[in-house]
Length: 246
Image 1 (tube, one colour):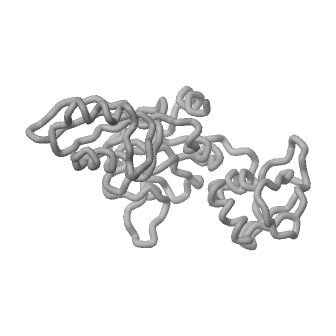
Image 2 (cartoon, rainbow, N blue to C red; image 1 turned 30 degrees about the horizontal axis):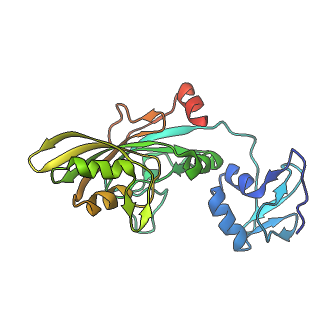
Image 3 (cartoon, rainbow, N blue to C red; image 1 turned 120 degrees about the horizontal axis):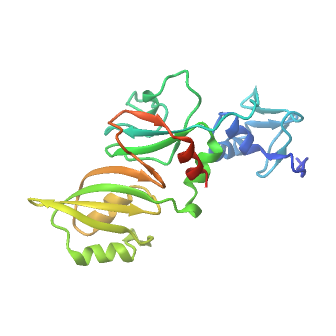
């Protein structure tokens, strides 16, 4: 299929699917590769194709995509409890972040993830495109955590993290870290990461000999957990939205 449109009104198909609340842009790409996306009667076989909303006809998995008028962008801050999955539904019936929002609410996309046994701040938005942008590695959005480990952390090990930890033979970005206090043989630390590879905090401390016992995220970019309690959520203020849209 030829790329039908190159005008300024044309929008990438993945973005249209995300704006329609069907799937994130990344998930939309998987739908395209699976042959589930049809534009003007032809199966889309390649990435990067564009369409003009209101003129072209798009179907996903056999269903016509209804493009809503541009919806107001909403972003929520949620205090994710421990033992909760960062997805909107779970085939095994476990608690998910979707359980803390009304079923009648708009389709929400989580911005990143938190481990099942971690707790704290996670952002959700009704704009799949925005969620993808916030997660993109190029933006290096800083995230702050309170971390409890077993053992009394040595200054030399903190220096190793500040230079950039080596995890599974891969050099990571420098970590901003400081000791908050110690209790018996436990150390509480404040940790800021600018990347979020899978289980990074647990892996980097375990490599140094300090098993992680608790992780609580309190900040994502300019947004703080504030007074939220476990399971509570709030919509970001207009000023916070301006900050995060940057």
